[in-house]
Image (tube, rainbow, N blue to C red; front, side, top):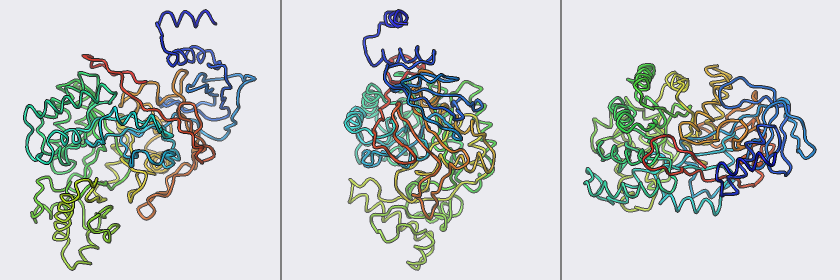
Length: 533
């Protein structure tokens, strides 16, 4: 055995003990033996779902250090810590590919709303947002990690804002795009997964397609990807989708639709036509995929339904409240200019003010805009939860083989998705509607998510994979968060491991902060999927 290990080390020219440990674990795992010489954990009695979509198997799994080192009919070793898991399911840790759980720079390090759903990794930097150079974010996280792994995209809107300042309501000049390119390159060099855009939001909404394409090319050249909150999820949905597909066609890089939806009454029931278009694109060779959360309501800002940003346009306001949502279906989630209206719908606010709904909506838009100008450091001058999607479309999009599940959620707030998205999949789409098998649902939240983000050795239970795992009761795993009680925690998860360390036991945090920042390994000139460490 020692000779085999020596040969591996020589052949791979390994100069890092960290990499050496992983290599040894991979070899020993194939033999069903522990990899570090310390006490390993042997999980027995569970039904194991490996993340590939294959049927569950009654086998054992051995964890040693940060890795899974054995899977199958394993013999107990004297040094093993044995966990009896009869009646439970063991699965790969789930990956949230569109997360805003980094609020407050990870102040709440236990991340309980995620662990209680089995989530072990999150991807931030979504919708074009950002909070600073990625290198700085990595340093902050390394100094105070959380219980979950974190990876990040680079936000186009954030970068555009740095370059253009308050003068962003126009196309960028070539010199400005060049400066954006330099900032993106620095992030990609620091390990960013790629470029994210939020093209319904300021300042990204004012960018040209050529600007976005040029930056996406840079992402691709350095081995990155592209993910987008598209320019429209309602009236101009088709044109927005065409733009994303064209980026995939011209760059050859993977492109992902953030929180896929048809948020317009006139488009309800048309999920099948969208999926036909996506399948045609994939047949053409475009690497398009999507993520989705299982709710009929979104959360954004009030202006997202006003693409021309004319807050005196009564006709546009009428369209927003009749075709895109309703006064009863739009609830204020944040409004620092007037905290008394938080939690109320536009219909309720209109009744309070004695005005019609459209007038109220437009006034709120102007009020939020004015507040934002006088409080430039305020992250959000407004937030609104809007009900706009049809359940049948959501179910069809979820069932598409190339859609993975996300939350688009936060640790706190009035939308239940941040604490319930993944658990809701098990309750609604596995047990109630039976649109997915348990195994397929887990694939859509683990290995498929890892594939779409380019995360190697995550999302599967195989020897050599990182030991991100969760143990749960398949009959009881459920969401409890609702519109009335949006922060009610999920139930049914027994234990969670992140990088081999137990971070949740019997549903309670262990206060072990085992998360790592997952960085892209830069490979200039290559468009092939990068490896991650």
